[in-house]
Image 1 (tube, rainbow, N blue to C red):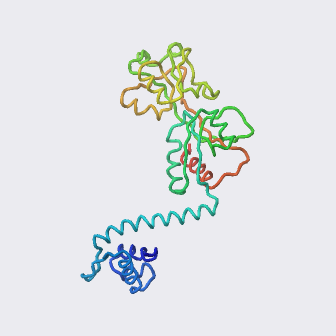
Image 2 (tube, helix red, strand yellow):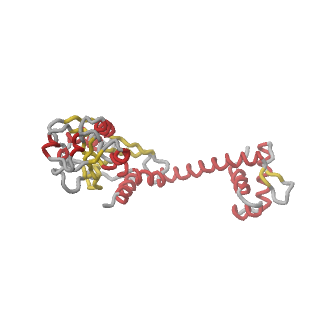
Image 3 (cartoon, rainbow, N blue to C red):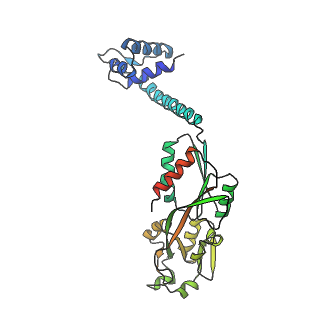
Length: 292
């Protein structure tokens, strides 16, 4: 049976211009490289190099084996990294809660960078209502949550992370498009579609304005209801921008919503609990990518 060393020397030789170059790269004698490849050919009962030319060239079988060898040593490197991570008590699984109003740009760059740093750590994202996320952090089911946190709880610590711009939207067919500036009275008497979490969080009640309210737990459902001209909505700009460009939604202004409308986002963790390297790194990445 061939050894990993023989396979590695074959890979180095196949990726070099000559056995001499392969010997220099591997710190071995040329004869050692040549012998290892010859023994590998015997073990596999196949010719890996065509030696009829001045510079040995890979045969078709050699080309196929090189593909597998690269995959093999990619996994070997992965195992070595995993072993190193386990010795450093690096988390194998990170559980992150995401609030219903939180937009992907808040966390997607940090998640991508975290994957590069800790490729062996599984990341699970859970999108839930704020109160459920809060309780799951307390119960240890979540390592942290990205949400709008309301109220005080001595068991939790929350730090401001960023602000998400909000916009007022309606259907192109809505009567609200007849006005340059929609009055507060008109807005109050026109049905509003809200994300359910806005009703359950005192910090988001500010954006619940109309007398007639419909709600949906999913932001996607809110958008679809507004597109059908069933009401207006106050929603993160990021989620509405594509539909506004397509013309299925219209942004409007109102005299009761002057200035910048935004939703404050918090990073919620368990108080007085030390977190592992993955969680700490993720928090740092979130803070870096959400600099105001």
